Length: 84
Image 1: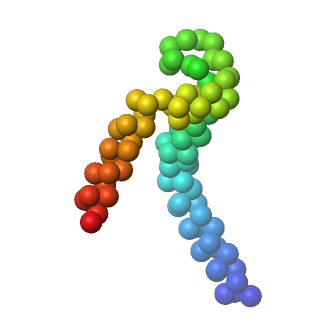
Image 2 (image 1 turned 60 degrees about the vertical axis):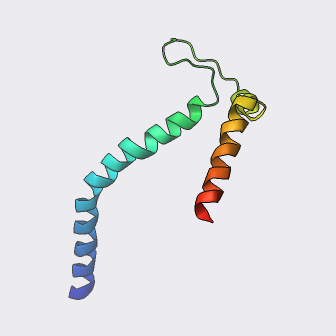
């Protein structure tokens, strides 16, 4: 019984020591990542007070734009040259 209590205490101590770093990581990495992903579904310019949800329109626009594909294919070509 004493060993089980000690194991629970060790797990609790480990969790309490790790909690501050987890909270900092979550607030600095995960929340901004989710927010940034959500912003891609809007037409917000970063300054306007009103945000319009436009769904996948930004993705449709970039995937049909030659200004995106030319540099992307060039980068892929250079990456392949560098690997081989």
